[in-house]
Image 1 (cartoon, rainbow, N blue to C red):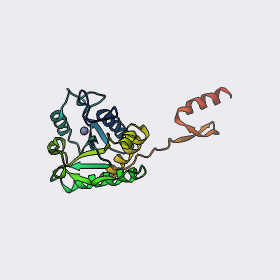
Image 2: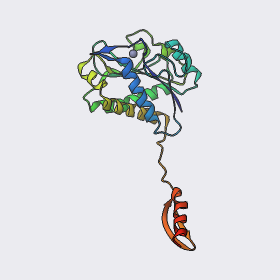
Image 3: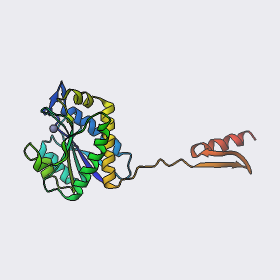
Image 4: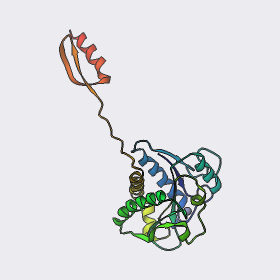
Length: 234
Ligand SMILES: [Zn+2]
């Protein structure tokens, strides 16, 4: 499963600001955490439309929306996940998908929403109106990254209001963002049926020298040393 993570804004475009906090920075921090959480699942491949505080697409030249979209469409990804904060007075969480998006996309949106809203409840935060929105219901003009990306699932996620005093505090809290990243990826994992990686225990060996057991549970790296030692002591 391939996902393109799109941290909103970047470079000279700070996005919304609230109390000195910049949306571009929050989006990037969250994007990096989301990328890390995908590492917990088998077969998840993650790329980003930008890194650090540039508007560069990664890898590639400085990118505005059109270049981000072109980059995403060149990757044959299954999911485009655009991360933004809300602003303009208000509170709560909401997410958008494109107008006319297929049922599959709605299913992914709902899985993410369920997971995220469960987490936000713990912080006393609920949805902003109906949390699962499609672009036709959006107050703003139609959202280019939703309209023009070609992958089977397309997403835009709003994560709280940067100019709301309570929510601003959460958006600058690394622990909150880390938890949020975890539940976003968990929702996606549910929708795509991703399996968590299991750390396989390293094999251990019984080491015998001249018919005598010298160690019953040796890791591979120690075997030669154990045998050498045993032969020396003979
Ligand atoms: Zn934004």
